[in-house]
Length: 205
Image 1 (cartoon, one colour):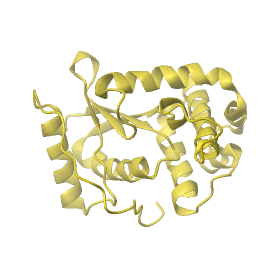
Image 2 (cartoon, helix red, strand yellow):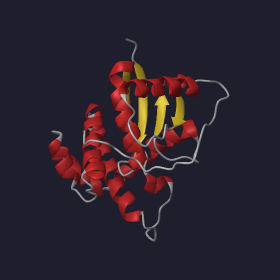
Image 3 (tube, one colour):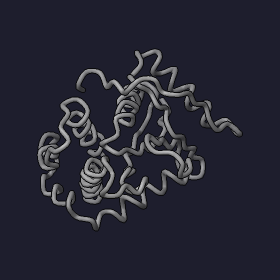
């Protein structure tokens, strides 16, 4: 099977991103996807200020992204998928938006010393740099999820797909095939309809 490099930009706090991430993890083994997990901070992207009702959540989530970059910086890029999934379990299935990064790291067997990065703003430059790489593929008028398909000059980027639940296997694979077909079609830009459902992440992974 041919391997396709994928870059997937995530903010742990985003429920839409979480469902799409669960979907892509489902199709990855059957479509030969090699996923690199990248950061996009909704705090930075949307310039959320302290007066916003969302500030506390997105500021806390930026701390989780800092931890991911600390792990990556220590050669742990291969562990980021499991760390992100552990974040997602706690946030979107357990309803916990205040857990300590140390607990998530310990749960997936990563050095808990990386937890110190959560409160270290020196990681923000790397978070922003990587976020900007994703936005360069799709424009600044979108959020997350962002997926980059391919590598180098041949990379194509998309915002989405935005889904409310992970489809059954055959539908999940069909969605991936359709997504990549449209993403690579010269001149194609957008399909959209108004969302009438909230994200349903399903069983805890």
